[in-house]
Length: 160
Image (cartoon, one colour):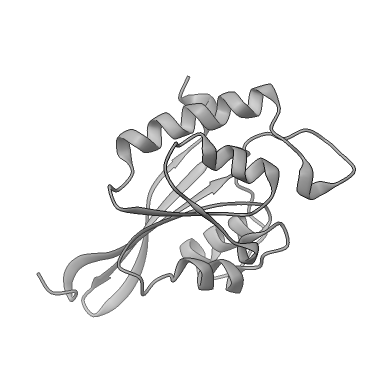
């Protein structure tokens, strides 16, 4: 099937870190007990539903690494998707929309929400992704035009 017949080119999954403790050093904030539960619930869902060949990239903060650890798959860290990451940083790190395959970004607000708004509305807006939630987009080509399709949005409290 050619790309112009509706082929899926890329999946982009945005996973906001789970609930974290408050603390004086933002980079070092760990997940709360509730956050650990949120991360485990979403990781179970991801292991069952995510694409088999999934490249996982996490922000290097403690809370995002702990969230990514829950999926029990290899992942890399990148400062490019850290707490101050903007939409251009997230797009560059993921390779959206040109990368073939699937990429999971484990990151932060406001960057993830701003990216989700751009993909769905064509504008970068201050949308919020709930802590521990996952937004899954697919890029495809239809009638010669690239489209971002929202496949699912899942909050961890709906998975218990």
